[in-house]
Length: 116
Image (cartoon, rainbow, N blue to C red; front, side, top):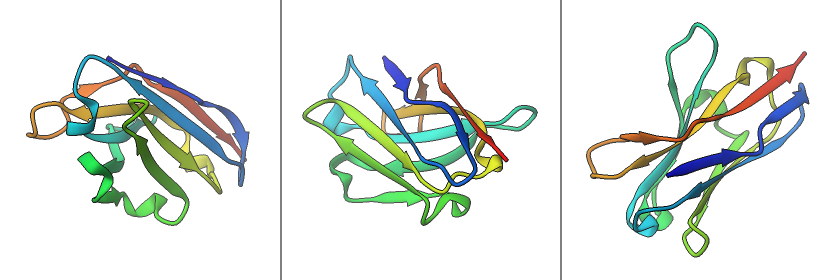
């Protein structure tokens, strides 16, 4: 189970920190990520962190602004979002790659709204 929190309404240039609490699996052995879906658009990969944290990837549009991290002791993954822009407005979903074959499990999501 994946449960996100930390979304909200923020002005352009502001910051938010999303959190995802994971349960039910060996968290440290799972690649984790964040996706987002804006109204009328397809779900988009935002950031990913491998098991052990050795490999981190971002979509180009958030590089330098967002930081993904994980705390295996707490079964948590985070997304620090700085310098937010209106185009970052979306529902953000935590994701897990449970079988090592790509992300196959998502949380319900948390709404992020950036006002101009």
